[in-house]
Length: 244
Image 1: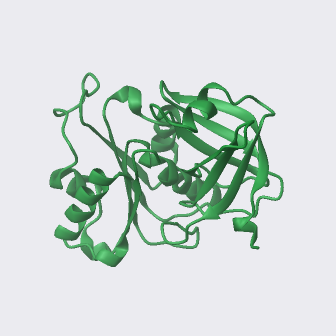
Image 2: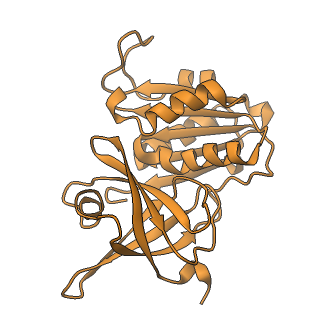
């Protein structure tokens, strides 16, 4: 059995609050085989009566040895996320398996322009790419278009402010769908052609486009990109289901 298919015990070592409903969990997973930004892992919980529940979560950062990070958003009536956010304590075990996925990934040796389009919690694997770019010293130009309901729903808000200032070649733009911050230019709206055109790259630059979020968001943005002339093969998508 390959290392990626092996369930291994991981323990919580750090917790960071991202939004009122989301937290980043840093786990120690001895023997973790490493991963590429954009990949995900499976988390499995086992109850005292033997009942098991597993969910997939995107990896939020490059691996640091056996340390891995995932950002979990609480799903109402979920079986796994409420436990991870409300109950899971430092030192407690969970089982993890991965990494999973090989298409929706960014490799540090790539130097073509990149457009990252995130809807809500879909920013998690894209943030792994942003962090990996900086860690590798890559000069590939990145642009992140991040759609959220309100300013309170922005994951990694302080880090994104810092990276927009300090990471040369990284540009970040936000779209707010329900409530915009005071002083923001424009009214709340869903991502449209003007947002993609203003933030993204012209098709002739042949950027790699990574689109991640709820199914409706992903389909809409992917269709916009193709309609604007981007090659379908260069538009990579990752969708989150209702219990993702």
